[in-house]
Length: 172
Image (cartoon, rainbow, N blue to C red; front, side, top):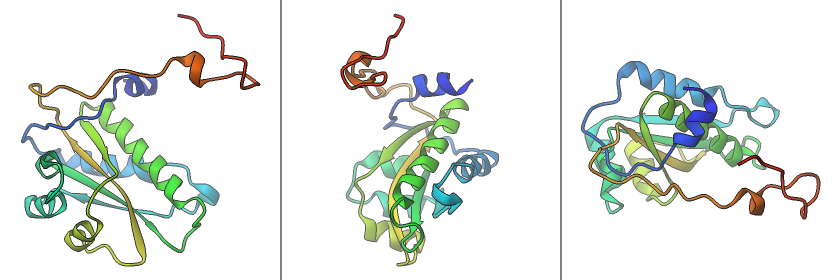
């Protein structure tokens, strides 16, 4: 699958099969994040890939139940002292690399921006020097649960060429 196909295929998945993410894929997912660009190549991120059921349960407690049921949760963090102006953006780019890689190999993902930071910090022993930016749930999508929306805004309303009032010419 090429990158554009992964971009077009990606959906937020909120129901997963119990099948674990293969160990070889854990390293590849991490590599996808590590290869992301970052401001001044500072690479401010650290990722915790959580497969332990008790830790996943602790992270998902009190949240949407699908979070704890995902076979893998990726915790994206940044060093609070490294490139403070861009570290959140850098981490988001790295997490998106992971999302696109996962999509390309048939794994579903969902960005989680609302979570109990203290629960995640405690479960994963994230030091106070790091800010937790987002979580990704990862796993094989359950065929019995609908995927996220396919709706996207119209290109004519969101992309312009050279000037705000000049829509990007697109072929249908």
